[in-house]
Length: 344
Image 1 (tube, rainbow, N blue to C red):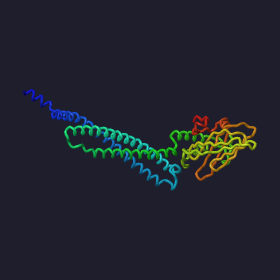
Image 2: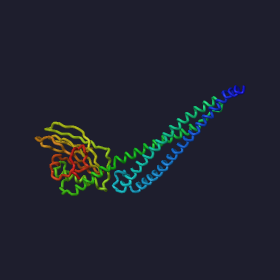
Image 3: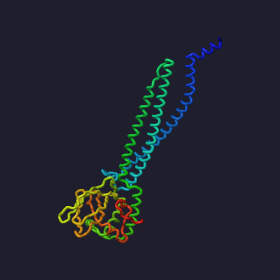
Image 4: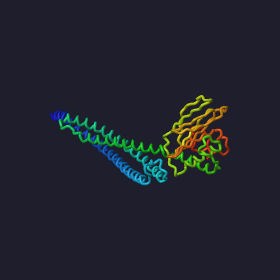
């Protein structure tokens, strides 16, 4: 009878429920502690990133204040001729890149924390509902969990918006400032240009000889390294129109784009047919005549359009330049022009 009583008591639903609840608590205890420890580590990393971001933001604001003092009135940063302004702009771009890296890490960690929190909240609510049904206890209040979840989601949205503004500012800077490779190419070209003997030519002359073309390219090389001349946007390619008449018959009519190479200089390679050719860029026109008995030739077109100044356009045959001894073939020439460059 005693054994039967014990067996009946142990088999009772009430005791089994209590034993199950006790086991669940014993198992959940270490898991909860482990989860709490991971949350603490994640929170510490997030706080560290936030502190670093605030410091960088403060430095960036100081850069902007200094730029505002140095910059000429109503002059875009990229067009300012002050070397200190350009130097500060480049340093500010580096700070923005660091801010982007930190903010991307922060967004990634917050999204991971939010995903983990939602998963754990779902499991916790499910287990609590099951216990409520078994023990007829008061339902779990999840209002605070929902509030925290919404707060985390808002943080992610805010940081993603901040990233978007950082990307935009950095892209704007990259459209103006030359890259390290471009600066190196300019330095090489400048050294070569300094060693050349200068051949005078008229700035208003359109068709240049090989020697004049070499001198013209050397002058561009020096302008590209002149700190007094502001940089220009490189995401804008001017369109020029070509019209060629042969015996009063229009044989060529096309539009082409000029490749920007910096500081309001543009260049293109073009095959020109014999006859009278008109080149139109913006509202300016230049005329060029090739003998009617000649063959079509490849030419380079260079355009210098300084701010507030008169545009200067030159045209010269590629073979005239390449056959010239000691011609200036600068390293900054775009690869798509297919012009061999000096060794440097």
